[in-house]
Image (tube, rainbow, N blue to C red):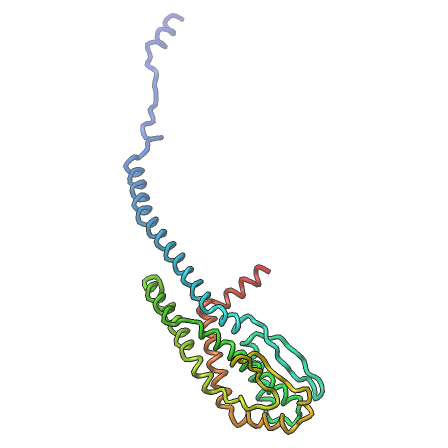
Length: 265
């Protein structure tokens, strides 16, 4: 018994050492930290710069929209009266935005320009008059737009605007510059008798329709004949407006705004 205990005591205890089980490679860890710090040092200033550029461009975008806001609303958001004959005796009163009014007028004009029905002819005449009245309102609004000031602001933001944005703005500014002269030159319709312009203080403020106009068929049909003789002028006025609407919608991302409104509603 004594010998057994003695032999047990004298026998060394074996201990297995795990040298590498929990060992940390500090070199790799420090290298990772250094790489992440370097990336952060590059990305953070880049992100800050991009944020400032985005904020600056957004402010410039709002500035442009404010300067031509009245025109923008007239051409894209305001609802305008449109008369659409649905029979030889009745007429439907629609409320359309200007872009839709132009498209509807083009269709109805081609359909009814040779009509013999006074009510259909009256619809064409009224809608053209109302279209031209809106054009006049756009002219008045554009007179308050300082293109030179807009150009200077654009140059000041030149380093923050992409080539695509510059091209969009250039197209808008060119159309604004020429809009007044083109629409004024091609408006040959002051002589229409069935629906007259209401003028106050040398400005066109509305339309004046005689209550007996539908009984005076000769007057209506003569006015419609005059429109047919001057279709080129009508088309030029429609085209410059379609171009301006197109360029403004493109610059202000109109489709995205409309999609966002639908999603929010």
